Image 1 (cartoon, one colour):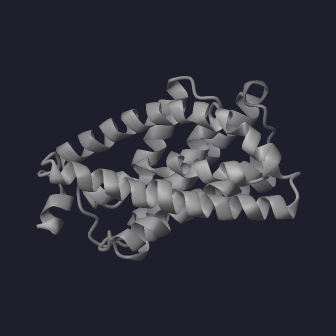
Image 2 (tube, rainbow, N blue to C red; image 1 turned 180 degrees about the horizontal axis):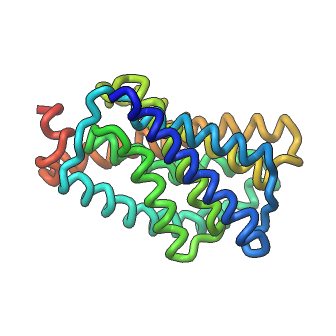
Length: 247
């Protein structure tokens, strides 16, 4: 359906803009960020691109109920793990004082939901949907960064989604997963730069970007594959595309 990418792009872009409006205007005091038109445009464009990638496959396969249930369960589990990972992030704060950007080597774990779900399900939308739902679960569980978590989740999942879309949703090897994790890392820094890091020096931002690319590749791409492969070998994923393709 030729209009599908356009519709998905509009819906995802509008959702991104609404969440940003809610965080920067309706909840400005609680979120600690202010409305910025340039930021709104950039975030909306990222949402449009992610939505277009989601709807880009000509024959968009319908999700089975069991796949939707798995994605929802993964989102809840990883949303809670993301909340716990915030404590690890806080404990690593001294690294930032000693080596600016080094703490970002831990950042990649926050992208793993958007890697492990598409690797198992192998359907369009798995990355952006699961990562966004995981961010929602983290927010509802009391996540530190409020509604901005939804924006981060959507952009991170959307960047990973674009990588899978670029392969026509046909390649789920280690190289693709690593690239998707790195893409999510790049997207995460765009969001964080607009909200909190715009005053940092260029050298520090460059170090953070490199660290997030590495972290996304390892803690999401490689680790996500390792976890899913372990579940597959244990026989827990026999109802999903990963089992069919591996067989």
